[in-house]
Length: 155
Image (cartoon, rainbow, N blue to C red; front, side, top):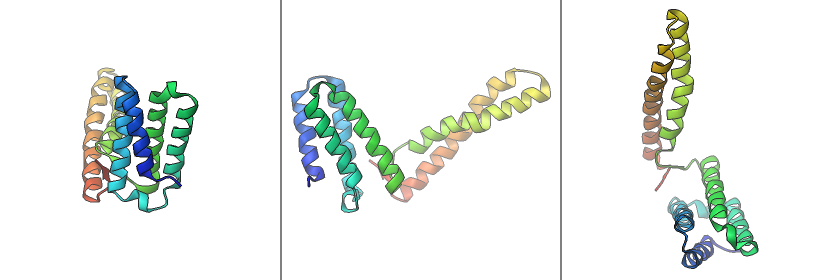
C-alpha cells in the first residue's frame, strides 16, 4: 500500500513536468493540503478514503495526462470535503466565507422583506442584504476563532 509520501513524490514529479502556471498552482495546493493533513496527524488514523482518492488521481493521470489540472482540482476538493466531514478540519476563513453568504440569505433577505411589507418601500430589501452580510461575517469569524482554539484549522 502506498503512503502519502509516495503521492507527494508523484505530485512533485508532475510539477516538474508541467509548465502551465495554473496546473502547477493546483498541484501546489494539493501537496500543501496533504502536508497540512499530516501535521494534524490525519494519516495516523484510518485514511483509506484519502489514499483511495489519491490513487484515483494517480491512475487517471496515467490514463489521460492532458487533464492533470482538472484532476488535481477534483482531488483537492474531495480531500477538503473528507477532512471536514470525517475529522472536522477546515481551512482558514472557511466559516467566514460560509456565514457571509448564509447571513445574506438567513438574516438580510427576510429582514428586508419584513421591512418592505411594513413600509411598502422596496429600498429596505437592498439595504438589508449588506446588513445580513455583516451579521454573517461576525458569526463566521467567531466560528473561525473557535475552530482555531480547538486546533481544527488546516494551515
